[in-house]
Image 1 (cartoon, protein in one colour):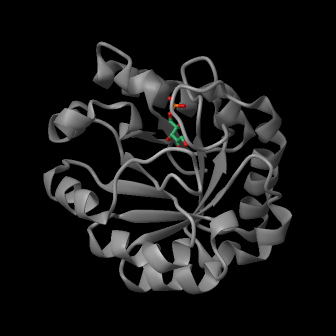
Image 2 (image 1 turned 60 degrees about the vertical axis):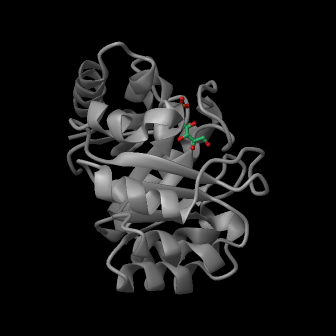
Length: 222
Ligand SMILES: O=C(CO)[C@H](O)[C@H](O)COP(=O)(O)O
């Protein structure tokens, strides 16, 4: 198992002060950037030009989570904008292997995300083509939602498959991750933890990041 990575989601940040909000999480491993198109999910955030500006301003790498329809058409723009990792949703992609290969060829990590109701089994054979699987632990679209325990069995299945294949593939969780829920995620096999409100809602963001990282490390199987 790799060391735990904490990726605060800037969805819960102050959008009027994004460069300052990235500085606030400079102790984190990655900054998680939620791209929403008001079609794949019922919310609208930002696009590649803003990601390009954030990549230039950020003290840490950007991890872009694309919640957009027809994602194969848009994904490469985010790698070219400077994102270190780009995650596409399986449900929005007609050609996940082609898109993942294009992302890797552009120098970005390729991630594949699964909504809570999407089964992992149909995508298991694609594991060698990606660098990360994102198991959504809420329905995508909004921060501050309640963690869905029903996603934990899938998280365990993803971890088992990654370990069985002995692949260098990260397993990310996103949604409702907090000091109350992170132990469950770590025990089930996650090693990248996205947290929006748990970090940006804290007076001391650096302290919140450190506590999440410690809790994750304490509960990840050795
Ligand atoms: O992808 C997301 C929503 O679709 C966000 O990253 C996620 O919800 C983070 O927010 P919180 O930690 O407050 O649940």
